[in-house]
Amino acid sequence: MRFKSKINIPLVLRIEGFLLLLEGLFMLLVLPVTYLYHGLYTYSMPFSALITLLTGFILLIATHNHKGEKTTSHDGVFVVCISWLVLSLFGAMPYLLSKSVPNFTDGFFEALSGFTTTGATILTRIEAVPKDILFWRSMTQWMGGLIIIVFTIAILPYLSMSGMQLFVSEMNGITYDKLHPRIMHTVRRIWGIYLFFTLLETLLLYWGDMDLYDALCHSMSTVSSGGFSTRTANMGAFSNYSQVVVSVFMVLSGCNFSLLLLSLSWKSFTILKNQEFNTYLQYIMVCGIGIGLVLLFGCNFTFGSAFRESFFSTISVLTTTGFFVSDYMAWPEFLWVLLFLLMFIGACSGSTSGGVKMFRHLIFLKNSVLELKRIIHPNAVLPVKINGKAISTGGVYKNTTFIFVYFLIFILGGIILLAIGTDFETALGASVATLGNIGTGIGQVGPGGSYVAFPLFAKWLLMLLMLLGRVELFSLITLFSRGFWRN
Image (cartoon, rainbow, N blue to C red):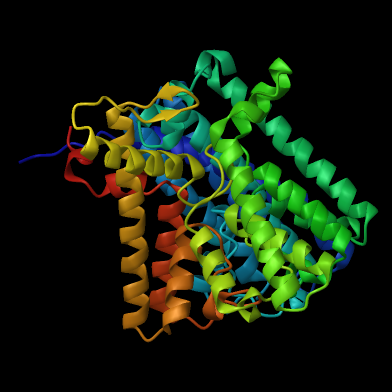
């Protein structure tokens, strides 16, 4: 049987060429840092920018005849999946040319971890890495956050692959039309909020104990829910004030950016009426207060340290940012087990965070409770409702299936890591931390840990988990289906 691909390859190459041009321009923005701090390999960033820009120009010129063609859903899925790989391939060049990493696998790992906003690192002595490379490292996460906004707001809903489709089309009073009739215009307005948060956090951190360089690097990593730091001690190297500022912006970055836009546009605080957002805040408050009380009375922490560390850790894990201020693995065992469980939740749909997302958990929990009622009252019609709006049966099925597949992949990843000799805690911690785009997990990949000791095969497996988590599982899985490629 003959098959003909549905993918418009020239158009896909044109889109990748455009993305590479953007990446090259971002590399140029790093050059002032390169020449300000006089790194040992000052040619690494300009040479990487030159190669990336030339490749982008060549792809655009070669596909000039396909300018203006419209993408299909198949093109969209394919572009979404390979864009992370293409950007990471060129994004790894600065690491390799500056000799910050020993081999291609580690360079690609660091770049993909950045663009997917995972924050998993193979670096062990962060301060020894050239400052321009660390700046690029944070910038990859910031760029990844920009791409995620397009991905979750403008692409996935039309491909019926995300909880965002349900969020936008089925929740009470919120539709694409109310956001804006031209979705990309809406995306640009959301990018404005994204940029505003970055600049505001940079200013607030600069007012504290950070210099402009550290403030900007940490702001880019915070707003993107990434977690890369310029210090080995991460946020533990900075003042309590800086930790509080970062905590606030982690919470904001875990919110649905569409709802933030609607709240600002309508001046009606729409986000405060949203059930997903309220549940998100409740998780933060309950877990933050609970952990804080245990640290205060059970571990002899001071009042300020107990609640600052508990809320920071809870927010960082729940938003999948991955920052840390202390080693929570040194806390009582049930506390870090609780944080481990929070790694499966994630923040709000339409945010830059990873994980399952709060919206899907709401649907799952509500449907589970209603299923018990349906057993008692088999003839009753009991739809799952979010914000007073009934979710279709198909929507409930898609999201519960997503959760099942997510846990299945997590378990499979953990078993494979165990099979190659990884200890139990590290295997589970690395699997959930990469699949959930968190970076910091438990075991050897807990706070202050690194992924450098994993064997070559394990690193590529973890990179696959990063990619799966970032593209919402089904997008990448779809590429391996036979029907996707049939015409």
